[in-house]
Image (cartoon, rainbow, N blue to C red; front, top):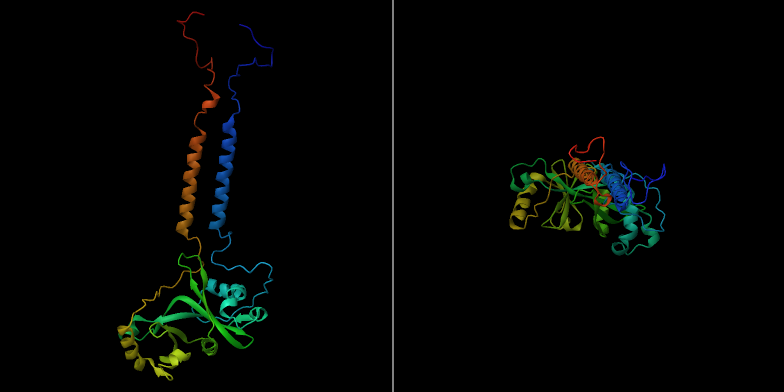
Length: 303
């Protein structure tokens, strides 16, 4: 049996213990790179390194001035305060072009938010007369008057994202009357939205006061909550109760612990599947040459 020169391999033969590189090597490299990329992107999103959902970016080509801290009433979550602080300017500059059409673009750039407060709804105990304390419960909405200098020009409403991604723009109300009433309202008072009347009321120290023209048409001045409660109950019984959602929103929306665990579990399963696939024999490489030391020749076979 002839042998090739020492250190060289005769064409058509394969040295035992070596495998030739095939197309599968490129596929494996691409699969590993893809898996690592998915891991990095998922962990970045889970740790909050990705851009926050629900944030309204400033329009391109416009320089956003450094936001000033806003005044805040009790019961406003930190992420809502941050939204009003950083997003009021960009939102008014873009969305306000349609609602605040009496203002020029330069004036809209000078608008700032007033005191941010939660929007409240009448408590069930007040509506059925069983309990007047508390008079109202917080909803998943917040509002602040919009001020041009000291002049109220509108109101900015923000709501909790239904998917838990954080606060998002709800709408801009161009009513200067409502904005003026909100700007003058005591921060300690509860701002209550009466859905059947589409009107606003303030409650503090068990006293109800009208806020804005719509409420003033129903209530001429301050009145004790105990006195006003029967009128409330009658109105809500006759009309459609909007069944306001009084559940407080979770702060710092985004990926919750359950979502993070689920994402990590999916990545682990995908990685395990990739490892199993990598360990499969490669048909392109052929059967490996037998090792004479481990597989001696059958003595019954003549040499």
